[in-house]
Image (cartoon, rainbow, N blue to C red):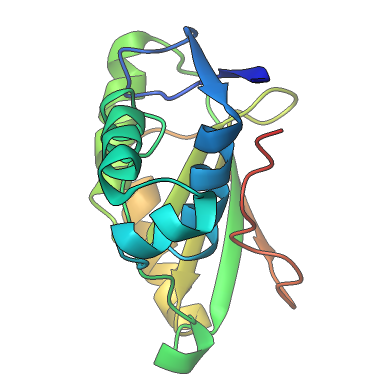
Length: 171
């Protein structure tokens, strides 16, 4: 049986940087669940060629190891009136651990911010905000800049989403 090694980098996981060994069946399970996380364990087991109990044990193991982080419904933002996606590039002069924690907590308090990444290069952070209107984005901008000192913030407005929420390539 072929074994594949997956390096997991999960910020909030005790597994940071540790190697998790996944075999072909694990890969099949992960591929099936990424396509449709609402499938029953019976259906997942059928698709990957396992008994329901064996499949449940593998899913439980993958969850316990932090490979599977949860199950979510993927919403169509436009269908619920969230028509504006803005990528905010942020530069700061502060880089201490204390400031970074304060900034993270502040960003988490703004529900329109759906992603935040610390990045390399000329900018320090990339934030994705999803709002209904430009006025709503301006409120997000005002909230973001009100409580933490930032050197520079610029917004990149998405004209069209071409590819989003693509399943991870695990091979």
